[in-house]
Length: 184
Image 1 (cartoon, one colour):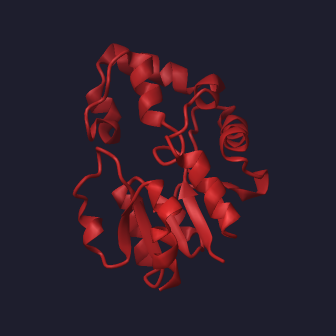
Image 2 (cartoon, helix red, strand yellow; image 1 turned 90 degrees about the vertical axis):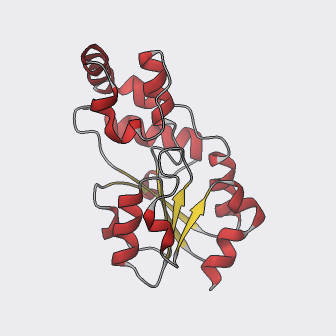
């Protein structure tokens, strides 16, 4: 079947919710993309300190439906690769990230990749919540499909105008829309 490359923060792990919980208030749509501008100086210092600790990464909640969606993709015979951008300020980040993926997504360590430029990864499909990442991946793989995970901060993203870029949430897996697109 297909090799599906899946981003972690914002698609599987609720990074935005974790930061909002830290600062004690919700983040408005698009604010997480410009996190430094959205936080007060005191909040910035606190968030920077906490994100350096592995416990933050270990304790993130998963996005609703993500675990079941990944399990369904595997059940259907797909190879799921977890591609995540490293957090260099946290020495324990990689260990905690892989442990999180093992616990929440039943990921094998060999299926986890720390990479900033995800467009360098080969696959049949790509799922990410950042329009810039989806745009770069589809430009590098114009005959494949990319999926922009639907979030309040990416609604109306220009990349959705591309014929091989589709909006996505975890219900797509259960109803089979993702698979029908991959078969084309």
